[in-house]
Amino acid sequence: GVWALKLQPVQEVLGRERVRGVLDSYFQAKEVVSDSVVSLTHQSWMSGLQTGAQYATLFLSHTGIKARVVGPFDEHWNTLRVIKDLRAYEKERATRSGHSTLQLTPKRFVQVMREVERKKR
Image (cartoon, rainbow, N blue to C red):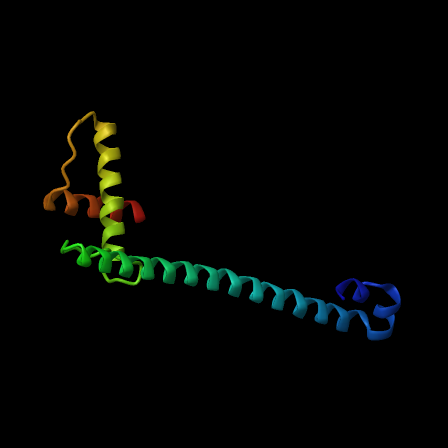
């Protein structure tokens, strides 16, 4: 394996530059394979969540409940995440300012988005 390429006699026969190139290629390929496995695992997890959401929706419809469980591949998934983040932000802001009520009104939503834009700059 790799350890053999690091041996002095092998480097003398093949040349240090060639050995370095082979090692660089090996480590680059290893990194690509590792990233691919992580990506595949993430994709499988998301697919499993989507399947679970579809079965939960089917179960609800069989019980007579008109509802839908949103999965990660549904168009509303990101919307729900944004709303969750906004609620957390509003809760944090209310805690800092000493208010006990939380209200995310359309006007407050616009204010929050403007604050976020200012912070980005």
